[in-house]
Length: 394
Ligand code: SAH
Image 1: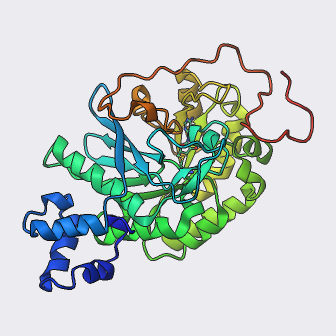
Image 2: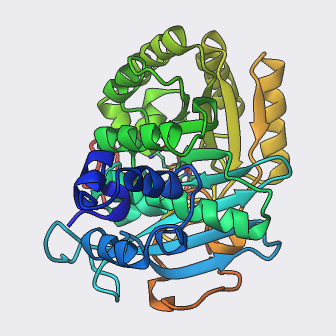
Image 3: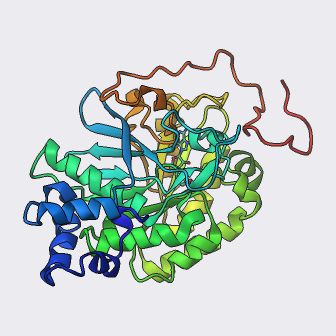
């Protein structure tokens, strides 16, 4: 059974083939252009709405919702059906018997941004990322991605009727380019039918080179963010294992071709990890890498996650890193860290709230700081087979 937002317009037409011709347009515009919930489309007869709900129910079941203390960040945990078989020890079901994904809505002075997931879990295995630590469950469907935006948009309007979600960032759980077709179909739906412009859509990738090359051939010039975190292959491979497959030189070429094709701003994400990638040599390497691409660097101190032993850089070190980049002619800003008190910050998204199902607000989540200083060369991988070469010191 397709979900409501998985229905294409022709499929909706088939479901409504006994209705007057204007009905399809009325429902489609109501759901996408107006952004209303199906049950609120009161100009559509109740019996028709009920039939639609039976044939194509919403995909996302609210399991928990958290609001930050300031009220400017909302995080949802959604239950989705697990279409890919039973739970395994690696991939346990949540208490609802389903998989869980998360969405974050952030209000800023001049915009509201929704951060959406593209997969339940992630196979990229970045050791510092909570989603990577949990492993991969399945791809999200087009409708599951689009419905996150639809729901966040309704919530933004509740917060302030003059508010509309203006920006969508594909930076939640999952790797968008590992689920390229569905992610791109969602981008088109969000652009074409919800009316969010391409310049306000950002895809964030761990650096899947074929995905970047394919993006360069698309019509819509969306923004591209690449999660770099290290600008030498040895370190990057430890932080971002997929670097072994798509090393920095290849990634650089793909980024250059995207720039050439689209002329959109490229940004690099850099989570600053204390003593690991916040050294003067990192500044130099990053500057050398970013400058020819005129890339903008977004710095963010690493958010603590349960499975990673190293902490984020201290604020003064973060500022020094930014200033160092600027001195090398690279545009760099420190990303405002949103939602840390509700576990909604970058890389923290993980269904740890599943057992809170039904709780509408949760207070600050405490994450224990590391109890020991990191070793000189910390093992940055998580649950990976032993690396070749000298073993990390204990
Ligand atoms: N897979 C995509 C999108 C999801 S991750 C990607 O890698 O870009 C979104 C961003 O959060 C990425 O830049 C990721 O590297 C970053 N991130 C992951 N874990 C983090 C953590 N613990 N602290 C700070 N940023 C983190």
